[in-house]
Image (cartoon, rainbow, N blue to C red):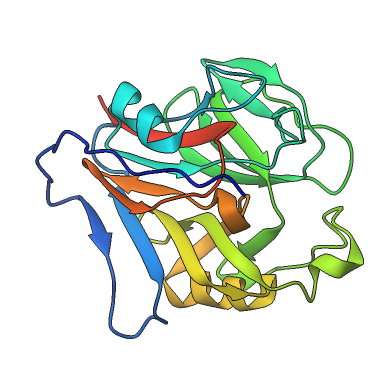
Length: 231
């Protein structure tokens, strides 16, 4: 594991509709950023500049200056993302995962899922595929094997990272420092109020940032992020 030293970030004033939340009912180590999607935000993936080795997370968010950011999809030993990545309406990486967060050309955030085949990204301005799916239509829908993950993923405990959508149109970016199974993580996302949710890369790749503050510092280089900009 690569140890990364945190650097000082330029503070950005927080607003009422984007905030870090640490509710008393949550297990210790759960960090969450809420984004009110009724406000003017742009959500999109970002690829690392250093495609071969990845980028350092604190340096990425300092350079990009987003309102919020979370680590993205899984990647291989060459830092190539293993899920679809759509930026500016263009498919910049084709992967094999079956669950995705997507933004339509009209700016609506959706969670997509396919049982087989490939995503059709026509009509979408941004997208990031990872998985497995955790929540669908307000219920736990976590089946890692059906989503193409190995049997060992069912019982594996790891630090988790994920994104979800609530009934009142809030995007939740969540990390869990305590190692848990995917089923446990799905329950946490449900308890947070998600009606749709998906898992992202985890373990040492877990990363979370909001308004000049790193809430979860990863121990690995970043190959891609999901970021939120204020329009």
